[in-house]
Length: 376
Length: 255
Image (cartoon, rainbow over all chains, first blue to last red; front, side):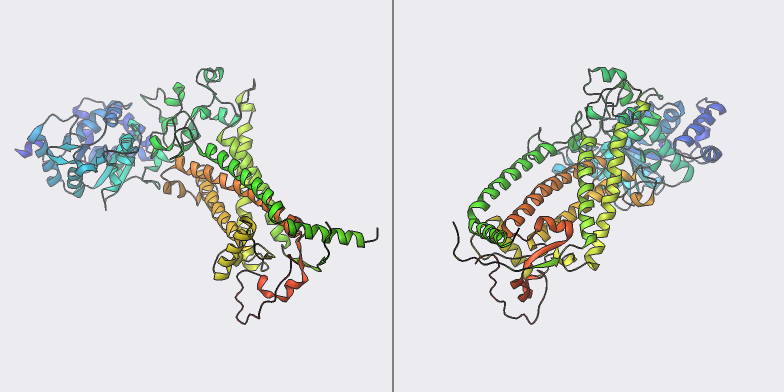
């Protein structure tokens, strides 16, 4: 029975493309686009095409824990239909709560089968964080806690992709006080490479690019210090922003309803986190390259950065200072400290003149004495 | 009121701050002032209006350029000072900054009692840094280090030179640029508070000791009572003098 769910011979990606009725031209368009996205040169197009033509599709298990499914949504809305049709539909056949046809025991069995059959070969995609609080009861599927499912699935995985900010950093459910103990994947899985693809959600093309890279080269893409693929996360939104000239010119939107906002000035002063956010939004944009938050007049909220929900306010550059009220930031704290210091020093100066009166007078007398003794 | 007995001190000129130390000090001061001003402007830019095209303006650009240039000066100056802590005179030596002996701690306590709490007690003489000041400078060096790490860490992703690129691991420690930037901003306040207290205390020491504290960072000289030269103990807080002769009673300040 299980063999019906997991075909013995995996078709290649290209076979799937053909079966779905796409033309060779569509396929090559897709390949060129992906090659560009993952940061390869033109000459690699052939390599990518060949890989997709010859390699059987990689079995994938896609798990959903504490999340909102925005990552999946983003993926199926990526600009090229082949992304959704082939990469997502086909890879997710094995197991994904959102899109699979099977349910109940059938679905669980499919997952078990894939894990057994393709041990050490399948890619584990995780969307969502794992609740560690209260023994993990906050997110249970099929009678197992998220952690149990993750550990089980991670054991035989070749590589693990942490989709989105939930799986990469914990996202909003990990915000203080983090009642469910939401924990990102890399803190729970040991000894396996974890590719973080943060963002809330990540850009669909970025997600597709990571998978194409894995398929083509059979190894994980080059990662930065935080475990993110360098091809997409090595530049700040700020450095690729089309409003950057206004930043350098010192022209800023002061409030969302002013003339500067209409002129499209830089959103830095209304809290844009572009200068501290590493993502490809400014280059790839969203929804078939239509727009991205800054282009629609709203600052970047830094959704692909760790702790963006606790690290700062959405419409302010300054951050709140823990323990000193919501409105207190580093500068308020600094000004108070400066005032206290000033008062303390003034007090000290007064006390010096009282307590060290004798000492100061001796110095003065000594000086005056010398002055008298000198002939002018 | 005229005192009946007046002890007129004989002062000796001591070359305390060598020229490189003085250069370091003022270069550091200028760099820090430039960094704080431009830093504030980067954190919250002025609301400027202009009819010019953005391409013809580079206001924020220049503010940042100044910040980066000052940062490089600050950084290399800092490295130089560390080097000078090994080759400079005894008042510039690294041992002046790190509490490594009981004597150092004891002097810190004395300074705290006499200069800060202004309790009654024998006045002490510190020719270079007093132990408390030395220790505070040690803390500022840590602040320097934090600023260099976080600053170059933030700068690394847009840098082309290998030196700032070497700091690209720093934001990863803080989980990203957002927190790194905030640490950079918070630490700046340490510099401001330090500067205020530092300038005040220089005035204070000059006022109550009369040894040329203020001008010492200009010419390098301090003027020390001759009596002190008979008591080696005062020369440096960390000096381990095995065969310490019995310290003579110094009647330097209080007669």
